[in-house]
Length: 141
Image (cartoon, rainbow, N blue to C red; front, top):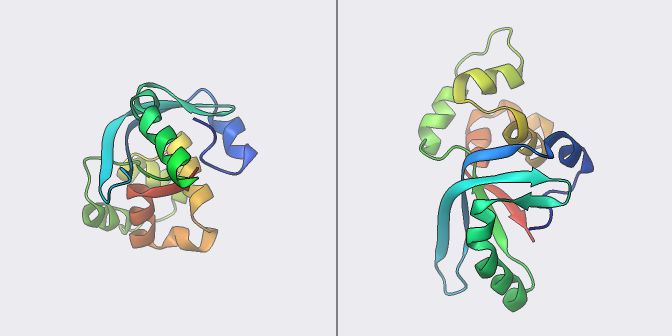
């Protein structure tokens, strides 16, 4: 699958790293959605791995039918958005945002990179917005 993001900086930082666990969700074209959990690896040209292979035919069909497909990535499956927002709202003291994300909700590396690319800098201080983004990073292809 080709790139889901726009900036080559993330490609360089993330190439060869796995995202796991992650849930991918996309429209089935009939008003419903398909949701699968698994993992994938970021490469210099996009993503690959078992989760991508399991969804590739349906995604390819959606692109052929509609010209594009909206994909949502849940970077923290198993945690609901409210709980996540509460955890993120904890005072971080002197810790950096990156350290706070790593310690409080286990977000670092590629997942942190996707978060930083998705949200504008000023939104990163809004725990509810960060939680919503972590639960549904939106990409279009």
